[in-house]
Amino acid sequence: ILLMTLTKSWFEDWFSSPYYHQLYLKRNKKEAADFIDKLIAYLEPTPGAYMLDVACGRGRHSIQLASKGVDVSGIDLSENNVLDAKKSENDHLHFFKHDMRLPFWINYFDYAFNFFTSFGYFDTQRENNNAIRTIAQSLKPNGTLVIDYLNVHYAENHLKPQSSIKINTVDYHITRWHDERFFYKRIVIDDKKSEAFLQYHEKVAKFSLGDFMEMLSFQQMQVQEVFGDYAFSPYNVNTSPRMILIARKRIQNAVKKVNEQ
View (cartoon, helix red, strand yellow):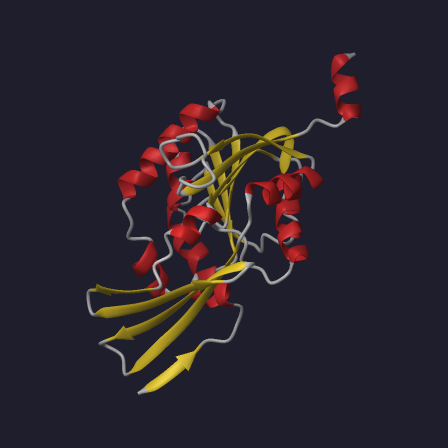
């Protein structure tokens, strides 16, 4: 049997793979829809507000957001994902192939979202800072950012070293581990329709609430609220499965003075 290990940046290949979408995105659509409903009820955006979905994948969250009477743009590094998402485009829903580490539209959006731990993939802190900068710069003054990230302490305590999942004709064998800086995952795929095994890897940074507050503060973003799950329960560093941050872009002093005159 031929074992193929894919050698590009892991997220470039893995997130474009149909196996990724089969493994992860056949999730409970109702849970995702309920989360968007709750999020919109919390944020109370004005009709027609401009929203940015960063690392939008095939656009499932973007599509749900656009159904709420707002204008949504989704960006993703994967050309395959964007081409698939574009099938759902309309006058209020747009998708673009774009690397979150590079600047996008400046001072344009009222809200920006980063769902489903779609951050912390990069090898260097500079790249992470660049991604935060891109998102912050895309927001208008007083704009709101929502980051949905794993809770490091909970993930450490609930890490399952090995598991196997069978979906249709495909067997997924997953190994998980971590060190001081990252969570790692190795996914070996045995597709009965293929003569080869595929092997992918994931790596996600162990960012704490303090880490995010520091990164965001450097880009003039201030954390307003932190929730611990998709039901918007209060965040607890030990028991919350998620870390959902709501941050706001500070209005610069000069802008404040002009508005107060």
